[in-house]
Image 1: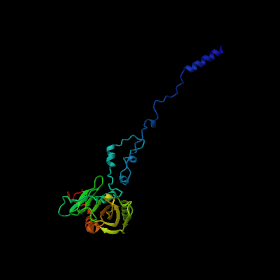
Image 2: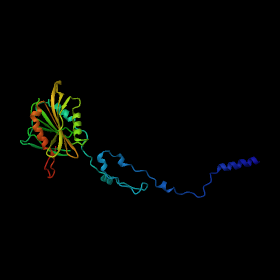
Image 3: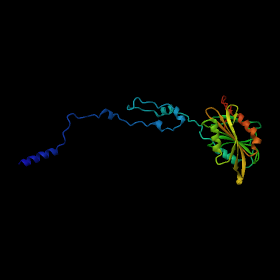
Image 4: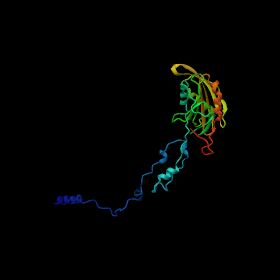
Length: 123
Length: 154
């Protein structure tokens, strides 16, 4: 008889779910609720070079974990910089071409003016 | 950087094929020891001293050639000081024939940038055209952009 009572008690325990905690939690913790992805590091992705050093830093958000929106148009305008067009390498290829061209056929002066022609070299 | 120069009146003139930037001037003489060309290159950023930069220009453009170079001399254009070096070299011309070539390399110091110029000619080209090259060199000056359409560029 005692054995039957013990079996019944065990069966009752298995059939019921675990008891609820005393105070149920209706909200998640705040830091989890406002967590958001980190912004892409735009400066790290831009080309490197001397010209890049003069750019202004990107507009700072109020806080790293606060919700913020960086307007891409304003960011582009604030960080617009014209790269220096001068190259570091010396133009040696053209010298070889000019050397080879000395053996080329007759040269015509073309439609040049009678006086010295002004010229300019663009960047 | 834009800069102005005065091209010799009878010389043929052409811009470098893109994407290169520069002006090619060719003497109006038949191919031979007096044929010559002047090259005006785009500005380059300074590297090391002017003498070392000019030396690098010469070494890189005469790679694989036997060169007899003189000492660099100071030159001055209308606006910029610079250095010039004269050298002779043996190159293999058309038909595999070896011929002597005279070259002048100039590097003008324009402050923020440097302006390379070169003269490439046959064995007798310097005697015939050195004054022309010096006149072109002397005429190099900043482009006058003070008036609208006051100057043009190619």
